[in-house]
Length: 233
Image (tube, rainbow, N blue to C red):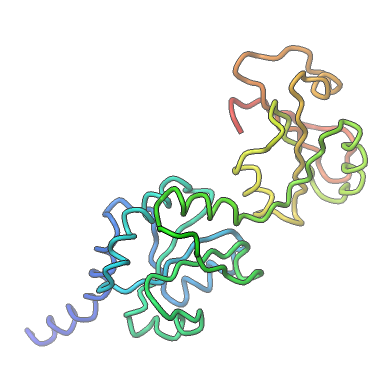
């Protein structure tokens, strides 16, 4: 009985040690080979740290990595693989892990090759910037109002959504959505600080604090069926 209990403890010990690297409330999720395969099938931007529980640099990175994961959740998921676990060794070898920690971003799951972090010190701010910049940009920027009809017509076979805001840039959320639903939904952006395009759709009053709008065009339809005002997108 004691031997059986000791065997059971030894089997779960690697998991317990690995989990202890990261804070108890971390957004970092541990992966085994099956979990890694599922993540690669999602075709979404993910960050994976290949670590070992005895690695000092891994322990030093863990709080910063966890902080970055919390900051970008749920836009970009952060994962970790314990390469010291026997069941994960083949996975780590296939990812050409030669030292710990090795941190990779997969911009679009398994569709694009993973890119190793080489941005210097592994601080949360550096990891956040690196992961954010790795999200593929599938957004059609339309600086001129005249660009919109052509884009709508070109993508008429799929639903189309346009973000209207005051800025010349679009937020990370919009870029993530464009990547996640690539070829299923067409995403566009138009800077509309004066609300002229919104006015052409029937909106003549801008509510304070609700300057952003999301315009939805169902597949095969030329006019929008839904417009949502939002505090911030």
